[in-house]
Amino acid sequence: MNEIVKLDIGCGSSKRDGYIGVDKLNFDCVDIVHDLNTLPYPFENDYADEIILDNVLEHLDDPIAVIHELHRIGKNNCKVNIIVPYFRSFYSIIDPTHKNFFGYYYFFYFDKKHVFNQKYRYFNIFFNVKSVEFDRCITNNKIGLFHKIIKKIANAYPMQYEAKLSHLFPLNSIEYKLEVEK
Image (cartoon, rainbow, N blue to C red; front, top):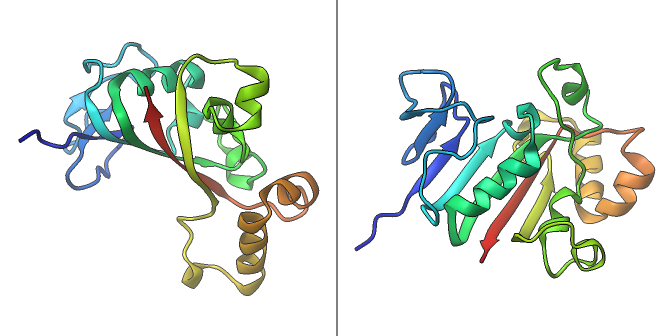
């Protein structure tokens, strides 16, 4: 029976249980020390069943190259979970180490089913976008009523929120749940 391989890329000092931790810093929990700006990553093709990048992609020099690398090391149907600051977030713009900024539709350019991919075809790799959610990591017991309402509106009507409300009422993060398609 094949063991399920889960990678926590950019885990820092808080690697998730059951995952192989990869980071350029040599914390006790890091299993593989590797600079994430150096490609290729030290994994074979079709290696992982699940990959998580939690607040990592915004720090890297070339996120598109990293996305290609995730596709290479992920098996077909590999679950890829990416959490980044929302580009309108206060936290996104104050951190001097952030090099990249992300909107709701960023990964739809990699999804064959979406009009952005069909119209532009920038890439020859594909991910199925399973879900995109604003402020998923921020639980309801940590936020006020107004934030709960904005979060609910944004997740129900993302295009309208991003185009008309996000500059007035910015949320903090976006979580993309993707699947590698080969």
